[in-house]
Length: 586
Ligand SMILES: Nc1ncnc2c1ncn2[C@@H]1O[C@H](COP(=O)(O)OP(=O)(O)OP(=O)(O)O)[C@@H](O)[C@H]1O
Image 1 (cartoon, helix red, strand yellow):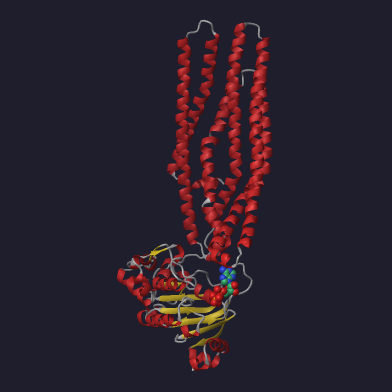
Image 2: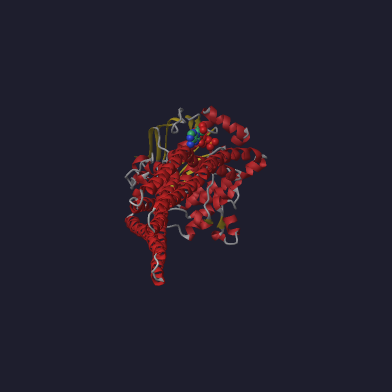
């Protein structure tokens, strides 16, 4: 837990030191109040005292109260500043860390949990810092100073205060130990609720179309109930604790006044009675401060378990080293520009038993088009994801320009690649923002580059029809575009990078046959120097490729041109005949 506070910078440490000074001042001023109260009480009970003296003591008391108010505000300001700076730093670090993660780490933590850790968990620690600086510092200082002030007044009063504190601690320890395990569960239950809500929102259309609202509600109800029950349990316990503490405080007041009454009754002369009376008023005031301090500490103990679980979860993310280690090489051999080679590559997903790819070897020369085809789930996407290092090969090696991809810095490697994912992804902004997205180590794409890429991707027609053309608005996830339009804009984004290697992961599936053909022709013409690696389901999309790799259950079942495979690859023939007639294939 404490390790998370290493994220404080010098500025926050200085502010924390100021807070300590302010808290000491605050406590000192607050403890001065009973002293003035005693002075006023004794002035009132002294026969020849003047009104003027009472007013002076009262004025000083007021000044102390205002001073205490001022430093309390200052402590709160410092604490809030420290806590919000801390949150900003930690959130930033978490964001950077998550960005460096490979799909393996993201899968391990889960997206929902990473979101909770970056938001809710950070807020828990932030709240602890605010409360900690305002209360945790104040309470022990206040308790010690107040105890020192009362300890020598009367052993009966001190004993009753001691008993009250012990009873208070017993109540608190029982409540906190009952709640502790529940607090720990709260954070993981927040993950669950986040997960179900996300799933429901992203799949809302499907939920509606399948009348699955009741099923989704049931799923949500379950996690919601778990979370509510846990909150309910902790709230019930706390609901019992607070009135109990109030009862202890009131009981203590009663005890002090009762003991006081007996002591005053036993006193011999009037002066002694007055002194005892003023001591009693002052003592009860200090005693309340002592009990209040312990009560405040309790509040910290309530927050501590949850915040410490949150801090642990944040540190888990920050301590995780990405499984994809960055290489050091940022230059490429000129002679082999755009070459891709797989040498006996096998791959299995982390924690999976079975290999998804086995002994894959092939090479692609500059400007060539290499296509992957095969049944769904045979490992096509997995194979091409090894080129930009979304995962690393379990066995064997993947080369780009004759150098193992692991040797390059990821930035250099990605500068070389234009990747179009299976599911078209657009970001909120304008069309131009989406096409000119990211950096590629060269000058930013110009308006002409964007227009050219959009033209090659066969997207000019619908882009230019938009009122604002290239400045047309793209909603989050590209929800204001059709599936085919999204795919074309994603393709334009890859082309605008002018990469040496273009990777299309089933990126033509939402296009009609005509657009698919025209787009491929335009690609061949305009990106003739780029090595194109295409995953496709349709024979029509890949029949002109220089090399077609037929995958069957993670293994190469055939490799060659369309004509060669039609002669000697049974798996390919089956796919071909399932899609096209003999005449079309002739
Ligand atoms: N992140 C993952 N973790 C574990 N297994 C995975 C993961 N992604 C894919 N797989 C498994 O790996 C196998 C190959 O998946 P892959 O996506 O490469 O197939 P594909 O040939 O591209 O399929 P499709 O044509 O349907 O896109 C599948 O059996 C799939 O279940």
